[in-house]
Image (tube, rainbow, N blue to C red; front, side):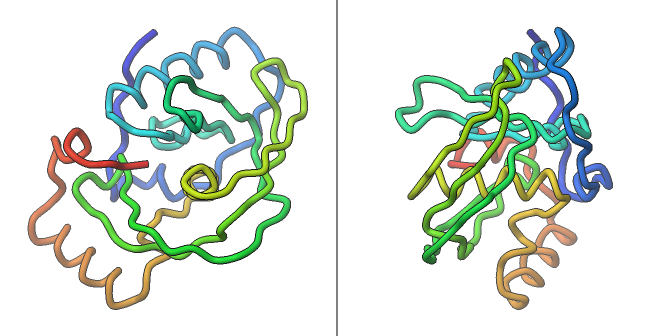
Length: 174
């Protein structure tokens, strides 16, 4: 296993739509292991493949208790409801946090590490993490989901001050 470099805001790879995962190969399993190690190394609770330069529809998310990781291949939100606003951060935009309104619950269909279909119904933080990570697969960052005034303030701050390299290690980020 290897810790991978997390791409930072401004890298064009973060804005590309990821390709579907085909067959589950040894290479895919190795990427999952590397992504898991990277997520924990960055003190995150979720990581999408595009964040580490892998343009595949693949995410890893910590379980509800924070004791394990689940890899989801080709995840898609098939149902959602309600509304919840909560502060989000991102390993690719270290040190930046803002309130984001998302669905309060989601149903996600995906494939597991063996290529078998699965469905997850999630609420609360898990629903937020799944939505955040699936957004990455479509080239969407959490700052795209905040109000325009907040987004402009964040972009001005990043342009003026840059991103803190160590910020993700000091605060909760997805």
